[in-house]
Length: 205
Image (cartoon, rainbow, N blue to C red; front, side, top):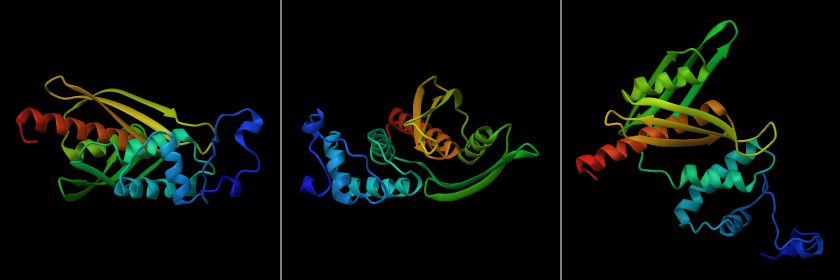
């Protein structure tokens, strides 16, 4: 790619060693792949495709995509464990005059299941719905929320720590502009890790 087509000055002219372009809605596949390579990711064609689809979806919601967003996309779409549980879609209603309700649809071991559950808050309702669908009895040890980048359109990153019946703790992570969706993805990621640990202990993987 010829940098003169998108750089009005060289990085060296302003005291920088290299470019650090901010990607956005109109960034193409080549710019996306080049940025991943600069960040040190060597992905297969299939992995790039999965990450690029997620990138374009995020770019429709955010004006600017930063390196931290790309790190989260790769972690979320490429570096995940095998999924016994998949989030298909969800909707959460909450307000000062209504009890928070989460409607969650998941694919569980190849079968689609859906439920709606009330909770003390939107995240609590979401977690309860996921627990009901997966029949999980794992203990929630910790839940934390953070913003990957600044701004009101920042992508939220959630971390969930679960402990199974044998006392084994795992860390699940999820990222999404909607913090409730990020919470659900983190919880499900942790459940998938516990499922993988259980299969390894039973010698089924």
